[in-house]
Image (tube, rainbow over all chains, first blue to last red; front, side, top):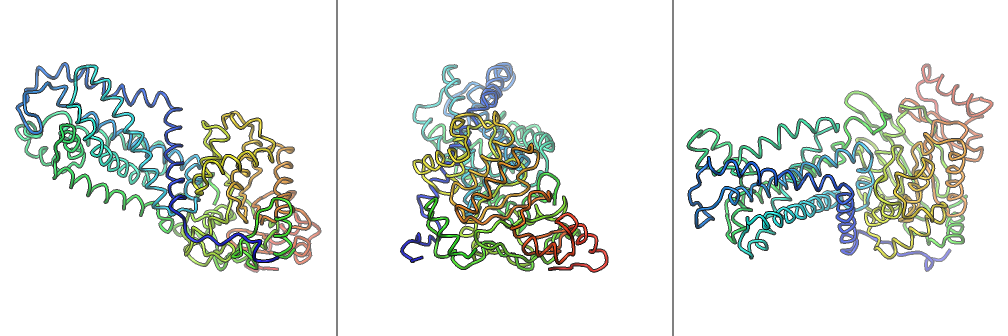
Length: 282
Length: 273
């Protein structure tokens, strides 16, 4: 056999191959999302219930002063809209992590991880795919809210996009980090109770922080150190074309920290499936 | 069969040119691999190799360590001790190059049940950096080969167990690997589906020169000309051509040879051929 008959040795991966891989992972995530219509509907109904029922009842109780980024008195519905956008992403981030636990139980995760591309890249793609799905949900929510006269400045819909990408990445990375520690699907209910609800309620999503300070200084500090508060504020300011630098720094820092944690947690040398391969066989 | 024979065979039928970095190397080399889960030793100083274009059966009962070994080869677990090479590429050092040459069918199903047959294949192709047009062409080819061309648009959920397995094998071949690992690929299938899968894989070896490591606990899946590795309680007890292993163990067939080998572990530790 002559050497001319041989294919050239390929070392490493080309940019095109990385792009094809990213594309494929996002495409699969979108397909899965579209197949789960009830997931999309419940992702939309949840914030809408808060917006139409909770906010309507609550706005008589809770007076809001003028705080940045708002320049006039606003309705309570307008105040909680950014918080609900972040809530959509929080649920989606945790649901993506649920799908990773599910994938791991069902063996689909193996398909992803035996790809020859670097593992950090595969996990980042997975994260981006989850974030893309959360953007779909958030904009669908904004559209419905807009028909309800809960509208941001027109340019706000554009300026909020980078903020949503970053907050989506942070919450997705957090979900991924948590998923690496969950061994079984059933444990996920605990994560809902111990992660989602405390993060959502101990934040500025439903009430401004100065209100919380009035009632409990202790809770105020809890909210202040909650990264979710900063995700909400980043979205809130961006929706009105403004930048909240502290929120940006916190959300950016947390994204990086959670992502590094997740990549380390999925590092093969630390053992991906600690209880042994699925099927019980060793 | 030598490496060159194998590659000629591969070229003549499917036209997959061999890669120069795969010539003269064992398809798979396992050198001194050990693995522990906590305090339990799952693999103890394993060493064997799979020759290019050979069908190597990895025989062991449930719990022998087969799946752990597969997880190490595919880099799902980090290698704690020892070295694993795929055509000379170290799995730990250059995982990308090693995994590129590897196709794998895991024991649990790893297909997306809600996606179509073609969508599953395209997803796998994307994970290997294969562009959409090329991926569609290859999907058509592999589906035709496994007789599922008419099911391309069906949801995987609607396939039979045997069809799913064939699809998983087709998917594992999509990126044209030189080494194919199958972990208990026939578990849960009826007699006919089992025979079909086994024949299909043997054909891949004969016609395309693909190297196969076939993990099983079923004696009747092993042919008289196969290479055999007997794994028991984390140790390799015997390896070599089937006839040789039987003769060395002074058995009359694989069954008795296996019983003798595993029965003897209590006294002598780890007899090898």
